[in-house]
Length: 216
Image (cartoon, rainbow, N blue to C red; front, side, top):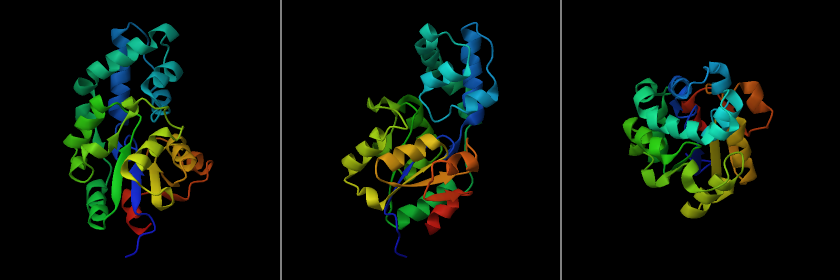
């Protein structure tokens, strides 16, 4: 099979792993520790894919001068409240294995910090197909999604041609990042945003199952 895309850059939350329950639990735990009211779970889920500080700004009653404090507490308690509630979406490991066998270069481009991202990639077995050296997180010191910086860094570091590269994600922020970096984009409809939301930014592909990547 001659593949159209020789390289694939994956978002993590909502694309590879179902992290919604774990994220909501950790946000609520953070707010409890800070003496603040709980957030609406739907509001928290709507910010997944953005930097953590944006979650507390947009989805909670956290005062502006305590947003950084909230993010620090969240990262501290995440392993205890979230890890047992995070699972891979169906067909992820099988599909990654098939893509690796076809010689596809794969990397992860996430808004998550390495502090939580690397253990998750390892714990869930994704590291068997995407080594930690190809896992990129928010703490690369670049502008966050939807800016193209993270994708551009991967393209540069791995010497990849954007014309042969597909960016896969569950939010418009992922797709906008990929398009701005000159890559093709693929939205997944099983994550944190709806098909209608994803269609609004005109992705090249829209899929309902991770395994559909095998035929792109």
